Image (cartoon, rainbow over all chains, first blue to last red):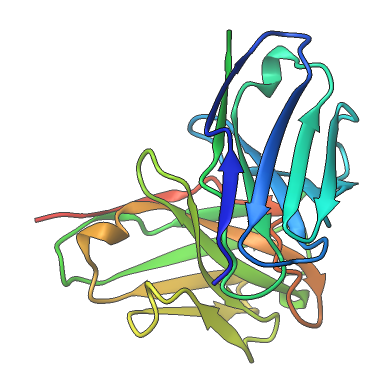
Length: 107
Length: 123
């Protein structure tokens, strides 16, 4: 199974900050990676797929990059509604696996 | 608009069974693969199972293989998850999720999610 490790697990930031979350895969997965946002008590929401393609309706302050084993999710200017938990997920093969999550909180 | 509504969750004793349902609307259900994903309380996301648009292929996580069965009724626009031999570690919110790839394989992706249904396995 492909293991995904996110860093950091917890991030404290302020509105307007630029933040970056990293996801490392245990083996190369080309660009087969997605990012989700989850708010408390809600279902996850797809933000980015194929490492860098923004899902329809997602604000352009979100961006993704990377290939192979290292990927990043960047939020260029944090908004109050962005404080949530973020998960990466590999699309390379079954079983589908997720990172452990990064909780983004207001400083 | 796409809607996925799960039902069937509840409290069940270890070793018991439960069947979850997911009613789909707002898209051509019979053209898309579907998944179940779960989340234990306070924990991360775990993919559980996938079924192809026509039910011909199914995949399972090792943690549920042999105990859970995913199925679908395209005439009723409904996805199911039959859960047998339940264990305490199966306690979670179970989400159904739509795969964006149609009439073919899986994109291994979840573009729409339901609101989830809570399954609690406890004596």
